[in-house]
Image (cartoon, rainbow, N blue to C red; front, side):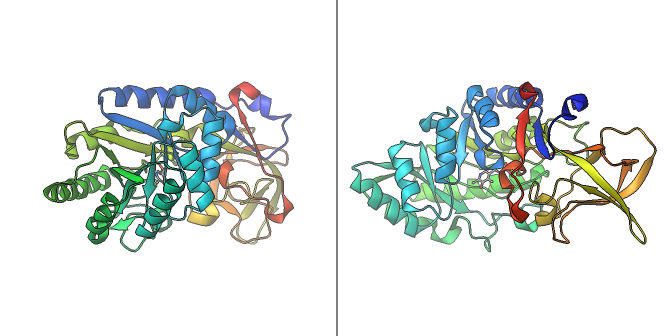
Amino acid sequence: MLPVEKFETIRTPFYYYDSCLLRKTIEIIKEDVAKYTNFKVHYAVKANANPKILKIISDSGLGADCVSGGEIEASIKAGFNSENIVYAGVGKSDWEIKLGLDSDIFCFNVESEAELEVINGLASEKNKTARIAFRVNPNVEAHTHANITTGLAENKFGIALQDIDAVIERAKKMSNVKLIGLHFHIGSQILLMDDFKALCKRINELLDKLEKNGTTFENINVGGGLGIDYDNPEASPIPDFKSYFKTYAENLQLRKGQKLHFELGRSVVGQCGSLITRLLYVKQGTSKQFAIVDAGMSDLIRPALYHAHHKIENITSTEPYEKYDVVGPICESSDVFAKGTMLNRCRRGDILAIRSAGAYGEIMASQYNCRQLPKGYITEDL
Ligand SMILES: *Cc1c(COP(=O)(O)O)cnc(C)c1O
């Protein structure tokens, strides 16, 4: 339940995070993963790097999965141990690699041979050994939005299957990198366990093949990607982590002593966040009516960027339902949160909640149109 009366005095738009739900979600993850002694969960910081959210997650003992130097800095500041930090990204710049080396992070997930050379060189300058895993592009399709699949051969991410032997041989000859694992990530907002099963199958085949050449790995990292229920945030506030971990436990043939790492983002923070916005005007169009709100695509870009669907509620009205297009104030036709959605009758000043906005919401906000960045509040702040 959203604390509506407390919202009245806060300047809109803003993000509200139900910290109770976040803590409960993390507890369930820890409970479900505890059955498997060799599983380790990292939080994908890019989903939401609000310092208060990061603090709650780091206090819970999860590791951090970073995709930039800024995220490494934010993670360390929030209290994550550097030995629990992994770092992926196709375009790591020199200062970011140096930061990772100086911080002694657990592992660089390396995405190309060119990057391997640079990491080895920079580590050598510092007389250090970088722990690395190769990010493999498994050419597995995830049944999700085209812009958020990452594991197909045509995507920019990872090293192609046919090139993996050569880079492994190259790494073995280097003196300042230590190959400790393989990394995969096939996409985001994945709800079909069969997609993760397909990844397991591909990894099994690859491990069999590489073992024949004498290469073994201490760590396998399968990335993240578990989706959330955007249609029913109230009915399914916590994703089905049990099935998710079970799918990997049953389908991935881990070798003795091998650790399995996960990098969950959306599924950890998605449902605890809402974008709270005030209704400015109801405008009658020729064939529809628009609910014009004070939040825009600068605050939450997912609908404009991915045609993502977020449930919207008028949390200050109990009047009969009417149909609205919910739109923001930004000078772009794509600044639309929902088309033809049913809301309790809207009047100026009503407060609307755009639900399931905890992941890839606040962190992707911009100042387009010289707007202020939205603030984020957790339950304890109100
Ligand atoms: C984005 C990303 C994740 C997290 O994805 P979710 O869908 O939010 O769980 C994990 N690993 C890597 C490498 C990523 O780029």
